[in-house]
Length: 580
Image (cartoon, rainbow, N blue to C red):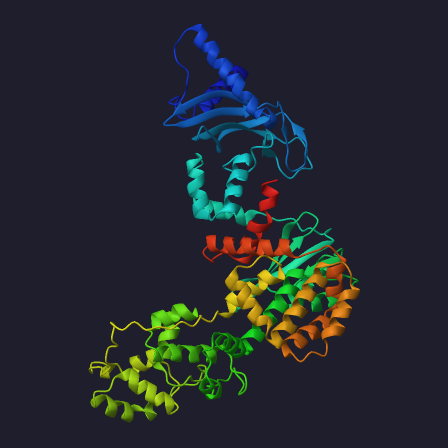
């Protein structure tokens, strides 16, 4: 009698568990025998979806655009997750609600009937355990395994909020905080067997804080992200990865010091891109130092460089030498010449390729001052003079120009802010006549970035247009440029070639050069000679690393710069794992 009561209560419990919402969402309807057979066939066909997960689909229901699937385990026994023993003695049953991937964009909810078993192993510290059938339903999870993979793929590809919105369109309702929790729960592999790596730095905050990214050249994917680029952080990583044999890096001395301190015979390879960029940066610096020669060559060719202009005193700054003004001084002189002809600051900015604010500032100056220093401005020395001149009706901008000649180092905007109580005075500046259109037939000076683009075309031996070819021929006529361009062009050929002896010949050819920028570059090559030689010998570049650095910048922007090192590491390292 007791046994029959137990059986009936068990059957009643299973019926109640099968319909946890009081049978409101069931698809059972009173119909013909054919309709019942069709529903059974439909349910059996859907059951094949979960056969690999050891689940049986009993019934499908749909309400409020949500599919409800009633499933249970297909096994007659349970496996204890603590000791691994098989047991078939059922303790109790309960219902788990689990979210699955959507069907036709509509959410899917699994009602899983889970059994609790008695553990027959007396040495096990657990007396009961709940079954975990198949490979889709895990402990303490509210989503199936494939649903979690979909959430993780969206999480590593976009920000948490964007992933939450996209998943909602797919029928997976999940918050941004849950997406972040899933990302933080990931554990990237250690990659202890990696042998060839590429390392480069990336900016947490440009000019302030930097990190390092490490790429495995075996699969071309990132394997780790470091919070610093100093010798200690990369040296610690090298100690944990003993099988590393080849390291491709930039010209940073921190990475080379960490490799040398490891004491292992590691082959260092200097990146070709950074080598070429280093020498072209030296060329840009050389052009800036000798910008007056470029200006003089253009004006002499046009016949507009008079003897008075040749003998005119130069305005020097702390960045220029008495015999060779820098590009800033040359630009200032060009602005003043066009201003004397009647050009307005906006037109001057377009002709010279500089910012409109810079042209306006130069037009207000009589003499080019030194670059702004960090010393505190001494307003108290000029208060009496400024108030006296302001009472006479003189404009503040004119007073600022006068005291600048007397040694005042403050800029115009803070000057206006300090003497704001005098700003209601009328300005005595007369507007320039607008009906007179100035004329200047001289060609505009190219900024250094445009000159470097022409040099890049020449190094790659691409076709130039007429104006570019004219500018390049003019630069080649300058002795210092001809020597530097020849050295740069030959160095690029040596780096892209296969003969290491050509590098030695190149260094011997230009080691006695009179160009300081080129000599400094050669000294750097001599200090890093082994890595540069391996660049020519081995077909390894750091291009993959540079690409992932750019991708890391995009990830940081998507996360609004608020992601920590662990989250950034999971997002960039786990992507190729989740999508393969």
